[in-house]
Amino acid sequence: MTLFGLKRKKKAAAENRPVRKKKSSGKGFKPLAYILLLIVIILGSVTAGLYLSKNTIINKVAIDGAKMADPAQIEQIVNIPIGIKADSLDVMEVISRAESVPFVRSASVHITPTGTLRLNLIERTPVALLVNGDAMALVDSDGMKMPIPKKNKPDLPLLYGFSVLPMEDAINNEAFEFAVAFIHAMKADRIRDITISEIGWHAENGIIALTRENGIQLTFGKGDFERKLANWQEFYRTIAAEKGMAAFRSLDFRFEGQIVATTS
Image (tube, rainbow, N blue to C red):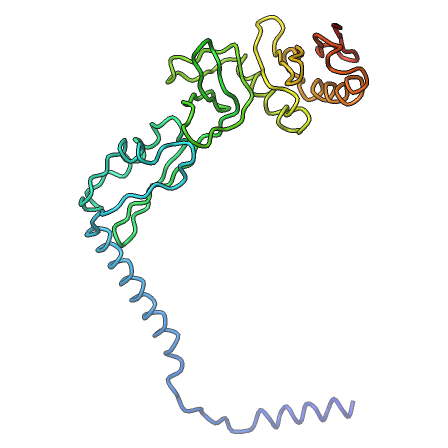
């Protein structure tokens, strides 16, 4: 109780002390000054940016991201006139023209203050080489066809059973969806990928593939490709390794729990 009473007295004494007023140093105005300065800087930057954007002259075109596509061909297709003011350029039209190139999935434009127009491309990813008679074309997972590039030609499985021409018509049917699903499952494992070279579609039997070694026919049917390809992997590692690939003419993986083999 005594300690409590002492504390109260000290507090009371402290409360009775005269309060000295601190001299104003003007520091309270600094945050407001900083905010005003920041606003001025931002407005100045925006104004300068708009001025530069409006008055920038396009003096150079740079194509980024072209691996399969020919940059010179794209530059010719987008047809950007050198010397045009940036604000006079129809950027959406430039993007539309760039995306009309079969290899290009999407495009974007950036104009630097020095007058360089950078056309940034994201190319399509082909999954197979379509073959129909003498006609050939690359195709991606969306069924979009592309000509075979002169450079950076991808190493892809051959795909039969689908039309190549006309090139501008995308493949959009259930059979192609089965083919793409099979290719993705095949690419998921190195053994599957390196042992299969050709893939075809048959209306009744579904996906049919040929092995790189000895050209053995593999029938996978329609769907459930992960399980069927896993069975092919196991067969290749065990039975084929023991007997040799030359001992077989065809293998059918459509039936659960068994592999139907035709021997040579």
